[in-house]
Length: 276
Image (tube, rainbow, N blue to C red; front, side, top):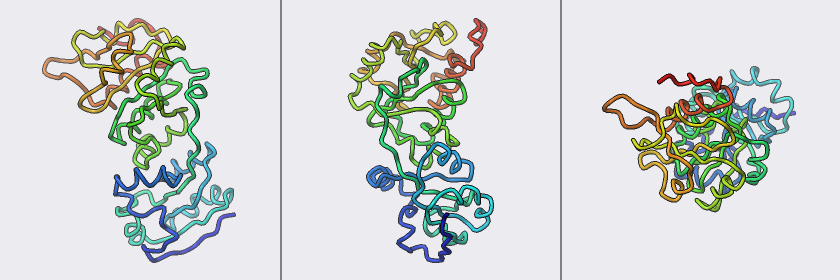
């Protein structure tokens, strides 16, 4: 059973996991080092717990205690209850959805474990925006991709903003980091995956003409600069989304949704999935 603890002091040391959540630089360093991550909102907290993550503690407004009563009954951790002003003082922003949970990270699986049984894979190279990372994971889960690999410099999929935007999809799609980059992409090719680079290059293959037969991996590069030469050189083809005159590219999250719809297992795989 959990222990309900009322707090009214934003400097209470027991709330250390939740302090300065708006300081991205600090949190990016601190959370992995301390082996924790934050989940926000009832739905996301439930999804994290259902996936087997262990809570360290929870922090919420009183109105959320009853709604999460079934969850709280199943886990032994302190539940700190505070008013909105105290929550804002601790976190640095208004917690609109009223509930936060600090959870223990798990050791990342090996690339081999993540790829076992996978036929459609997403590879993220150096995305820096946590919102984009979360959105890509949500689209991958919704549209039938089996796994996600991220480069060493890619933003943390378990950062609070990524988790929130993904609506917990980061818990549903197996993922890990590829330490040996970009040489680690050679492992994909050796496993029979066709690596397809998403690029606005006008010489690239139009998305409608891409062979949709798995296994394949879709590579998405960093915002602005796109994929590096090392990653591009390991791809079987550059793939582009045809666009109207005057527009050369889409936001990486928007582009990923289009590509995953066209190539994911949720697609009909018919020739008219994307009409010319």
